[in-house]
Image 1 (cartoon, rainbow, N blue to C red):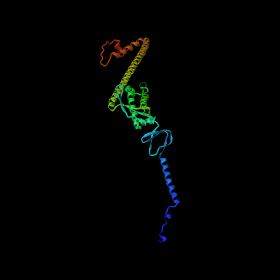
Image 2: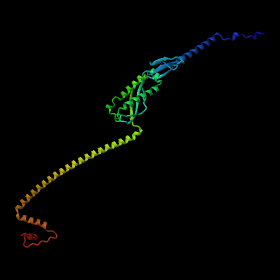
Image 3: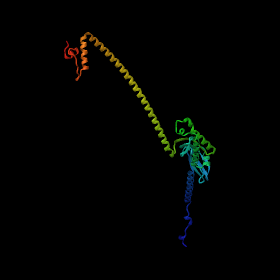
Image 4: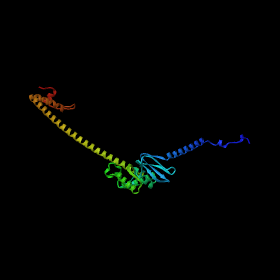
Length: 311
């Protein structure tokens, strides 16, 4: 066998330098995988939130301080709960008032998670906590509004009757939440609106319209009475003014006629014959007309004057 057909296996084996590169590559891959695992299991706790760390479904710790934290890979999970104030819109519900009227009360609540450990243990989820709180709020509102009459509820001016309604509801709900250790606190509860159920609206609107018509009719009656009073006073004042004016006019006329008579008497006293002639002529205007027939002696002074004899 010739030397050309002999293969040296040692020549085909990788050199020590190649083995070093392979080892370094494997170490780098492991380090990268380890770094990626570490980074993927880091989480940030931000201001205004709780980070709940669970292990196999059980809460092992709760992070509430802002900063960077870590969980065990593949074993632990992280969820977030809000630390700030939350608003819960309570579904509208019908409530009976003290005077047995049904109203549709619509409220909203402001609340927060005070102890996330207790909340998770007793309510499991945030949605379930809101539902429990909503039931407690409805129960408290129904109890408080049931002590008020309908007019006291819808009238904002009835502050003395409603008193600290919101505070009473809030305190009653917080007592129940603390007693059952739900881990949440009701900060405030407010009434958005108070409506009537649909079946009662038409009757109430009709009653309101009738009341407005009655009020308008009362105002109209008062206006008519006031107008009649003013008219009567005006007529009386006009009558008094006219009576006074007529009395003054009659007095002035009387004074004028008396003055005229005095002047006539003074004038006629100066010439008696002229006065007699004047009176005779005036009598002609009174006694003689178109169809008047007078039979007088021809020597009568009355006839002579009529015929134009003045001597």
